[in-house]
Length: 249
Image (cartoon, rainbow, N blue to C red; front, side):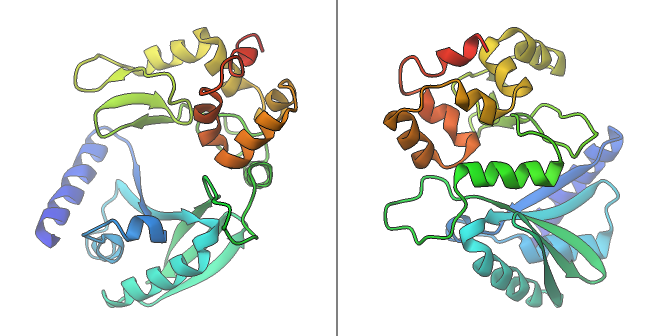
């Protein structure tokens, strides 16, 4: 894995530098994903950063709030295997900071998606998660790439392994495929401006949009099942008439 990964990271860094950009590689460090990953790049990546100092790349980590203890232990033990002593400093409900070799790396925590009936209490519900995000960025929660106020938000684009393109959290609207379609930023911006549902989600606080839906047992069950704003649209799309109420928002 080592030589291949070094080659990939070097190539990525060169592409980023040639375009005058920067790239943050965020590695999953929760128990669900760690269990599925054959090659674990967490320690390798920070060792690569320490030795090569790529000017275009940075690294961070992500997990879920119910796995905070697992993530802290895993990262410290994994980095120790690479000769890196690490400490972790709590920052907020959604953030830790990992300190290793004089460098700091963010750990972002999402809330639990699709909690099962037997899930232990203590996890953030969807509205609590939204409140935590709003506190972090100092602005109301909308869809899109949320930047801290006063910086404007951006597009939040996700590309599936198949090459299909979506705006993150709005996976009921396929926007094309990177292998077969020509998709540029202006086309994506136009889609947000011209599509009523997407425009509403990108420009209006989600909590306000939710107040426009009838507070029925069905809606409450959908919110509890998804438990995450970025999974909510997918759940609402399975019930006729709900998302359509936001088209005119």
